[in-house]
Image (tube, rainbow, N blue to C red; front, side, top):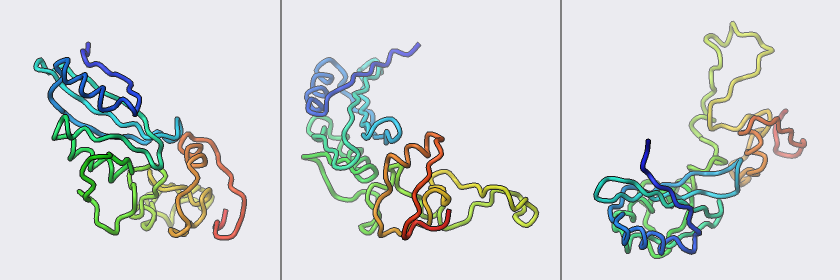
Length: 191
């Protein structure tokens, strides 16, 4: 049985909750990360795990909007949090106000927020997914398999990267297994 604790925190109370946890004895910063909640909520969940002297864990959990989400930095309380905030900031476009905003992992020309689930994985989209042992022997009527992280071309069409991000509602429906049909239009590609 786990003795780990989890507390939901309002984004406005993020720093106060971390300070209170530190004062309760959870004075060791362990990690901070984020997850995209697309399909469940239009938010990104940020989780910070702290530990006490007996190695019990306390997770502080909050949610911010997927676009333009911001939290105050915990680096003033836990200096090690700055590194993790930079990672989460680059990957999920969460701004940690008062923190270090220099790029940590991504090149300056890298796309913004590559870990958000509506961001197509370029390498997987560029290389055809085999879907069968021998493409010549597979039945032509079979639907081509699409690798995880690549939108189905039958639904999304051939996307122009300059067209901007996809509609999160449509992506959430596809991720949930719901059949999504888009209207034919310019630039959508074949169905």
